[in-house]
View 1 (tube, rainbow over the protein chains, first blue to last red):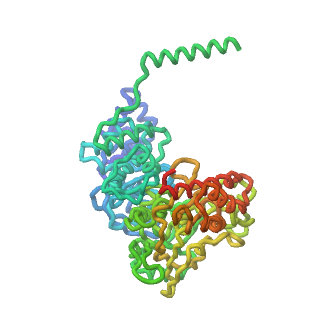
View 2: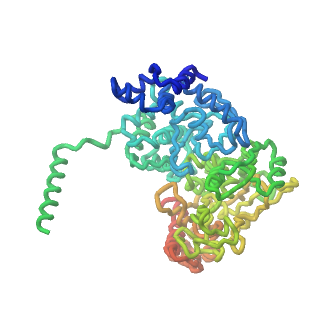
View 3: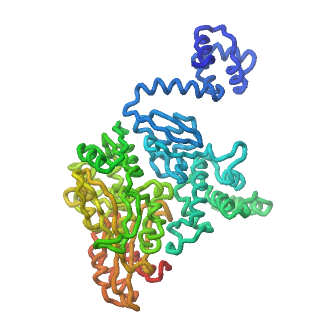
Length: 281
Length: 335
C-alpha cells in the first residue's frame, strides 16, 4: 500500500485534516480557492475526495495501487491462465481470466489505454494493435493466446518525444476529428506500410499474379487496405493523405483550406436568396 | 462471455481427443468469428482448445497422389499468408482474390483457412438471442423466413432456415474443386470433396457442415488446373469494402481460341453453402464465349432462384454478376 493511500484513509476519520499536496493540486486544477476550498472540503466526504485525488496521483503510485488490486482480483479469477508476452518491448507476465481479450488486458491490467474499445466485435478497427509485426484486432484476440508474442500498441510507436512518422503525418494532415479511432488507424497504417514493402496484394490490385518487390500504393489501394478502420467523423481524405505522404516519402498537398472571401460571399448570397424565397412563399 | 476452460494444445492427436471427448468443447484458431459469437452468447462452449501452435501451416506443391501438381494449404495457415503465397498468386489467383475480398487486413492476419471454412452465417436472427433461429436453437423457428430477409438465400433454402454462407474464400475453393483433409478422434483421416463439405439447411440448419464433432481440418488440397490466366472473383456489396457479399461470383475459364473448353462458376451470398452454378457451367461447355452465350448461361442458372420477400433484387444482380465475372475472367481481370 502506498503512503498516500494510508494518509487518505486517516483523512477519512479526521474532518479537520491538513490538505495533501495531491489534493491541493487537484483543487487548484478545479479552480477552487480560499473560502470556497474550505467549504468544498467540508461538503465532500473524505472518501469521495480520496477517490478524486487517487485519479490524479503520480503514475507510479497508480501502478502500485493497481498492482495490489491485481492480487486481490487474482484470487477470484476463474479459469486463470498465466501468460507472458512482450508489450512495447517490455516483458509482461499476467494471470488472466481465460475470457479476457488482449484489448482488456492492455487497457485494464497494463494501463495502456491508447488502444480503444469501439464496437468490441471486430467491426470498427479502433482496437488495432500490431502482434509479431502483423496488425490484428485486440478485441477478438484472447490474452491467453498471446504467450511468447510481441505486441506493439500506439504507446510503443514514438521514440521518446519523437513521433513515429505516421503519427506526425496524421497531425500534419489533420487525420482525425474526435480522435477515438486514431490509435487504431495509426497502428493499421504502420503495419500497412510493411505489407506494401513486402509486395502483398489487395482486392483492388490489378494483377495479383505479378508480385513486385515493393508496391507504390494508389489512393484506391490505401482506401481498400484501410477499410478495416472506420472513422465516424469521416476524416478519410486526410487519413489517406497522411498515409500517402509517409508511404511515398513525398509531400502530399493538403486538400483543405480556410474559406476565403469568395466562399463566404457565395454563402452570404445563397442565404440571401433563401430569405428572398421565404418572403415570396 | 460465459466461463470456459482454456487449453493450449501441443500436438494434434491430443487436441482432437480433448475436443472429441466433450460435446461442448471447441477448437480455437484465429477466433475472429468464434470469440465474437461467444461475446454475443450465440455460442457457449465450456472449453476451448487453442490449436494455433500446431504445425498445419505449410503451403506447398503436391508431389504425388491424385492431386499431383496441385497445391496443399495448411488448415492453420493464415488467410493473409495463403492469399500472398507465390504458389497461390501465380497458379490460383482466383483464391487470392477471393480471400482478399473478405473481411479486413487485420482479420485476414488472424483468420486461418480451416476457420474460414467453419465460420457461421451473419444472419441477424442467428446473432440475436431474443429471436427465433433454428440454427442457433433448433425447433424455435426461422425469424428471417417472414422477417427482414434482404441478405438471405435465393437458392437451396428450406422453411427451417434461409441463411447464407458468409465466406468468400470458400466460393473460390468450391469452384476450384478443392478437397478438405480432416483428422478424427482415433487418428483416422478422411478427404471431403469441397462441394460436400458444407450443407444445405434442410431439416438440420444447426449443422453448417458435414464435419463430425472433434474432427480437425488439417489441410485443403487444390488440384492443378489451367485457369490461372482467366479467372476473376467479383464481389457485390453494400459498400466498396469490408462488407459481406450481396452476391459474389467466382469465375474461371479454360479457352481454346474463342471456344470454352472448361468453365467453373460458383456464387456466394445466395445459399446456405457455396453455390456451384452447375446449370451455367453445363450451358457454356464447348460453346463460343459470346456475350449472348454468357447471358444465356446466367439465365439458365438464375431461372431456378426462389427469392424471398426482400431479396428479389438478387436474381437480377446474380444474373448480371455472372456475366460480368465471366467477362472479366476472360479479359484477365479487366472490365
